[in-house]
Image (cartoon, rainbow over all chains, first blue to last red; front, top):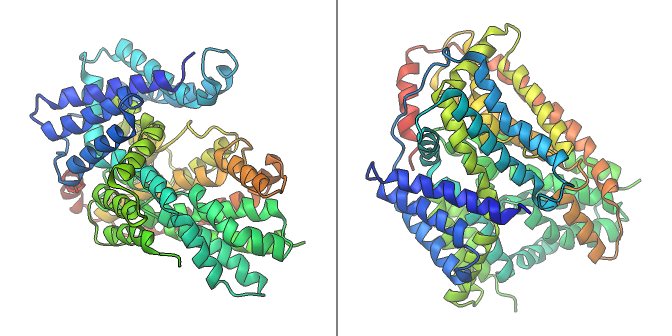
Length: 302
Length: 241
């Protein structure tokens, strides 16, 4: 059965290729960085928690000291030679992810919990084969171009995993309980609107700190949502929680801590300002936060 | 007496991002400081870091798509995407992104979150198309190009976030069901996901209105043709940090 282990081995092989292809240009910092990531995908389950921790510190040392170099400019065609047929292989990855999710779930060939990720991997393989057959590029061209793109992303490629690790340390240290306690202390008693607003704003703010609404939800709901809104004012738990989570998502739009959504795209799109995506989202997130607070206020208390 | 010392990590993160220090180093420093402040040993903190890093490897799987996207770009996919959209007279940046927003919300609501994404669709297709539509009235200046690209990325995020919670088997819905269950309240996933619909509609209206506004601003701002050459070479160099 194909599941995460197979996918991790494939991902490790791709990163190993990025590392090896960094060597001819004497880009040793990049080679070491992608090589360590390849090691993490190949052997992460065998080197122990402390071993993984040392690996993380080594990645930080390389990425934090500027050891990674920017990619050299690439030779790009203007697209007239192949025209609109170029869109066909571009759509293979989304199409395979779509079809695979529906068709492969119950075949027994694929771990049903990982069917979308495996379908994504399958789409990559199919697209690579199709491109190789159709365009006949030089043997290493695809990996060479992939390395150039991953070098453009640079250290931001591992930032989402680093932030997940920070969240784990926060959990061990009890940061959530501390923040929850502080929040309970500051909300005014008696006003339903003030309590709803405190819950919505608290969800957004704590999500901005943690970079993830999933981490903020249990803390804020235990501190305000459950005791004050649901038990105190008799609010509908389904409305309070469902829309409260979405208030948290407004926070996700406004924080660099949600790196895979906000910082990685800035790197992928080669933006000068790495916070440009966050800035573009604030204008949507703030009015939407107000909307979500109003929705809880009107819908949760019939 | 409760000690608030572990909150030092939050302080480090906020200061680090405000001073634009390297985020990787900032986050590592915050994690080590928080763990130590909570009275944990260095080895234990490093182990917690390592375990969580290892457990969250699945978020980095998306980077295997880069060889496909890179190869397609080498044969001119982005240029072709720009040219095609430039041929549709009625396609503006705002309208194109509104259509993509709707597509992203609807597919995410069906649970199809990996069908699109920043690496799979925004970089190779959506961003160049949005630029192509904006360029029909003349070349884009430096700031306008950044703005269009950032809005393309933002549209993907808004569509994903305010679509996926309508799907009953998504992680956040299951988290809420589990949390309420632990506190003695039973709700069905469907009860939760219907309450995500009003916010999804409002998200479409708010972000859609901003995209219409973006169109108007792009039309008003006279493009500075001279800035273009300087800018396209500048983009390659300037993102290193």
